[in-house]
Length: 132
Image (tube, rainbow, N blue to C red):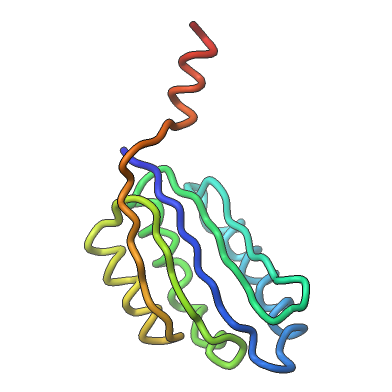
């Protein structure tokens, strides 16, 4: 089981920052109420409120797949609020996740980059070392 980090970056459409902030808070509440496997989910605005970054961390690809399924039906209204620039996935997403990401790009724009993990240490290893 390999962890996966997801980062997407979007430009906020002119005059839409306040509306987007409300929508982002509602989206975050939707995730909190319906998703139990995601380890972390955050939506961030730049200081000048012209860009938004969404970051989530998953224990594995199936967790990301589950979250993407949860989000897909609520994403269409975001077309009027953002222009997606990029999605970066750190880890090895399943074919199902890749299809979900392509659908998101088809809806909101942008590109997808997958970053293969070549080295690293996970919290489980640190917890084991602390017990030793």
